[in-house]
Image 1 (tube, rainbow, N blue to C red):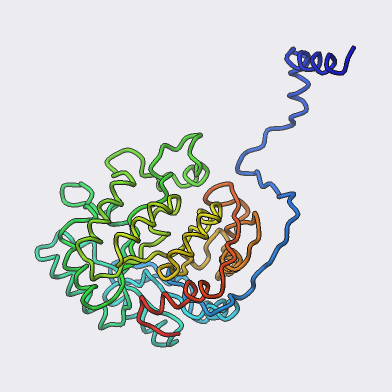
Image 2 (cartoon, rainbow, N blue to C red):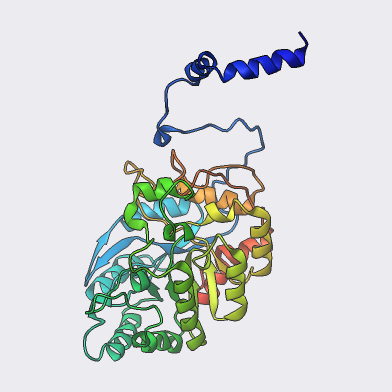
Length: 383
């Protein structure tokens, strides 16, 4: 019997009940996907960056959560400063600084107590959107917030995906009630950090084709598929109409323009609206799996990309740590090295999708801009 004949015979035998039983036995016990934590067998150079090459302004952090005029703080300034000094993180911008009395308390606790190390943004008073005279009221509240120390305005995806009117319909991102607020921000020359959409996978069915199935399966409330939710494309169109109507207002479009999976679409936004900037918070997992495209994007828009992490104290399922500063080491590695195939988050299982990333190895000129110079310009602040 020839070697080819033996192989053919073995292939036929594999299809018999006896052969199939043998294969099943060799497969071993089923493994739950949640328990699958493969270790890469690649042997490639590794460069772990303990401190950023240049001082850093993290434009996207959440040091508190607000409710009406009160805040819940996630860490003390002393705890955060220890991490910041360890990682060459000069300034943290707390986007969710609240409003009213809560905002004033946050500014006193962080910004004024530690000048230059913390900056605080305010948030619109969404629960009052149905009140008579709301457009002027909200504009006036922004002016007061700036007098109280706010350095910008944060728009959560409350607008577009959660905020509903008296008719129980979702309030549109481009609702004219908010025009006075956008105009006030432009007049005061403060930036608006805006997040109105999520990864495009969150607008798709949670099925075997969804690349973020595990993430959505763990957090089904993050899904915006079906019901009366607008599509990702519709949200971005509404958002872009706001940019067009308010050209004198600076918008920091969070999470790489809300569409890190499609840098061509983000590029089109930046080209069309010179009043827009982007930051990279919670999206190096997307950027790092398209390193050649991402590197070209950084080269082209080096003056309009800001450093951000979306960092939250006690994040990434590590409650034993006050602040998981391993996150910063990964971001620095992504930006500064050309390392291959490494984790994009300090978590046992990749939180967004089962892939790894590649470093961009940015030159010093671009690193300086991304780490702090672009943020200095947008915030009108010097480290």
